[in-house]
Length: 231
Image (tube, rainbow, N blue to C red; front, side):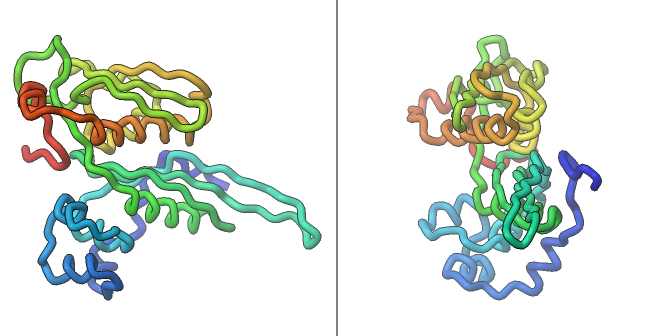
């Protein structure tokens, strides 16, 4: 069986799916009617995002990547049963990223389900210029040091100067690239060889930026912007 890990998946056409979409929720109906046209407005509505078409409509340029595929075998009275556990990451490389997991009897089905789960777990990413080495102006690093944890794995993300690149392992790099982070320094502790925990800890670090209290003055000094950044 070919290894589908870290391979772009472009088989599904979100635009074609939208043409057939019949909203089943209040938020979906509002998006379909054009009353909500941004992802931030959808979050601010307070309504849960339960339809993947909402995400496809508001952020049509999402890419997806398979982070990990794990085959699980179990013996039962009827014989050997095989299931696939998949973790996938989605992002538009410009301020939005999501991480999701799913399982299924077939790997392709598990991948599709994981991508859907990642879209329904999408977050806005705050970026800024938090490195003392950088000259004043907007940046694409994390605005300040932040920690994330998944099981025994811990990831610390720190601001880096423009042009430094992503100083982090490949799993964390995949998540940050899809989020639109271009420069970062990092420290890791725990079982970083466990791919799903490493990816989860990196994602949780980005998520924790949004829960950190920042004053308006700090936001201005660090050039913090949330979500999509216009060129």
